[in-house]
Length: 346
Image (cartoon, rainbow, N blue to C red):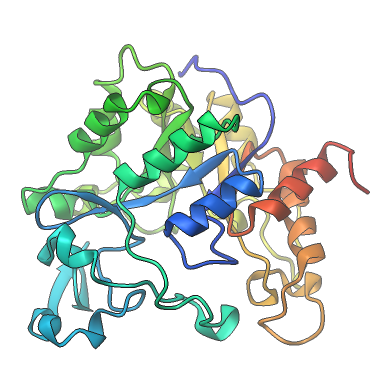
């Protein structure tokens, strides 16, 4: 069982930056998240062809950049199998960093969040994000980093493994040698690999993400194993996770499911079981639009309505259920939810 301590107060994690306001994984979204009070900012990491870590939720970039508008890259549209699933589009590993830097971001959810910021921001590298953190520290703001390694087995198969380059970058920057860092993955073997190499880095912790119960971590699937996320989330599985990780990251509905009326129901045993194993619980993902909220918390009937009160209520309910951290698209609302849970707001 892990003997690393639980967090002392709930953490607000800026999910892909303050992406309720600005396109995800842009330096502008991370800067807004820092200004809005995030404790940790989250870059999802993939690789360029020339081995540079860049911030994208997935390696397919057709949906969130203007790559389709670049005729010079038209021939690079292709079909690949990513974590066992066919995906068609353009992929970061087929572009050098210099080529990726010619692209501009587009909003992932235009029907909900509009397109006012499309075309304004380039792809951000992890190096640039660390520079942003260093500037925040110099300005007196303490904020940490919670990177997620995406498609780890896939990139390793291409000779573009991300784990060691990530550790090297974290070690090279003074701010990430001391600030809180939490490395996440939906896979298992890379977290075990990282645990063996974190001696002397007490500021770096590991988070095992949990997906749908019947799904498998892709590294397990690729190796022909039988382990499912349901197994990891069981009391026995959580005790095993605690040997190599410090926290688990479940979907919020695995903590507070919905009842027949569309309201938040009583908590499942997951938080209590995780804490009994010595693990923190970082719940994902809280978004402020009606479309993502429990039906009982909706304000009006429009899915795109930004419902701050409903989002705060949902996050506060999860804090009351004992979660240690919230992944949210709107860190300012996350701060208000923490304040409510701690009795500072009604």
